[in-house]
Image (cartoon, rainbow, N blue to C red; front, side, top):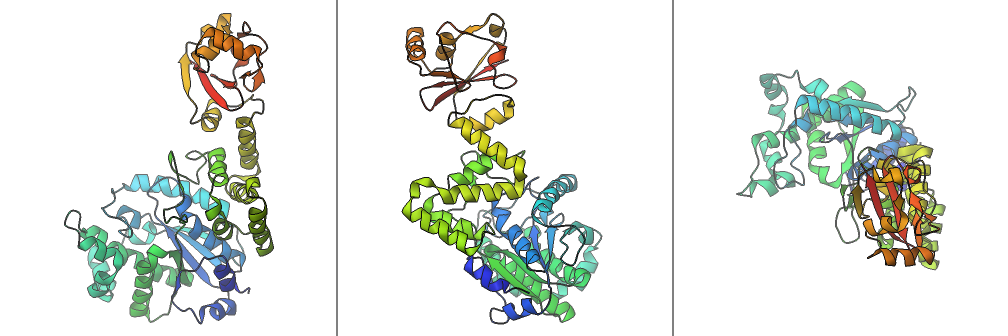
Length: 426
């Protein structure tokens, strides 16, 4: 077995462990089963889930067996860790749909095929929903000291607030998650839990519960949260969270997010979010110093992550979209794809009927707001600075019809090098 702990430390991926001195030897002694939990509060994971999911992948590639636990039961309650108010409760039907959607994302990162290090995706609803209240309180609750729960930061921070406080429902979350570790140990021989640094209290609660109930010794590792150098969470764009689902965040938007990571953050991202070898990461570090304008680190990170989640087709689509934004000719795209590429570009809707007779190019630039007047549009076109779908317009009186659409209903206009606008024809 490889020295995984040294690798994780080099990548800045260990925040806390329950057995710092003995953990490397324990992991090298035999294949272990390790789990991380994911609350299905949406139908997709987001960038904030990436580090624990990739941690499971790292363990699998080192010869261990990972389990991704979907919180179909705990997701009905909500984890109070890092929250200032109670989450909205989701129905069983919504949670089931979310779990199914997330499983397909996990399958892109972990190898679920049978084998010695096979990954599993399980749902804690399956072993929790039939647990009677009295049975749970008798068999599990009696082994869970309230004093220990009250000492956890996630509980203390909420109990002191008069405006929100902490409901019994959220208070019980820790007990349910702790029991997950006990169940996974008995059902699959799972001995290690990994999670974000905000999960330390939940992880140690599970270890303590297993010791009290069955006298077994379990282990835990937390990894740092994915933060920017200014301390804010990474994974937020102008339009909201950066999701792992292509339906929520397109491959182009996903790729662009990583292309735009600041130099101050990119070195850490290359370590914690990729499996690039040490020498390549260090070479990219050096290249950033010698030629920061090339943004080689950002391009490598964007390509690696997009390839992992969206495959060759996703990388090709993202690169094509990037080239289009910087002047490549546009054709055979969908309205949705153009909407992603030009999300922040002004647009105007016109009746589709105007394309029947043909819309004069000069009029199109005025309608799109790229020219103040028809004479201004003529001047731009005659000077060679006007483009439709990134093809230069030859004459102000050129008529634009349906053949000039870049997608089902969108025409892309450009004035100069980077001033874009869209015309939508409905």
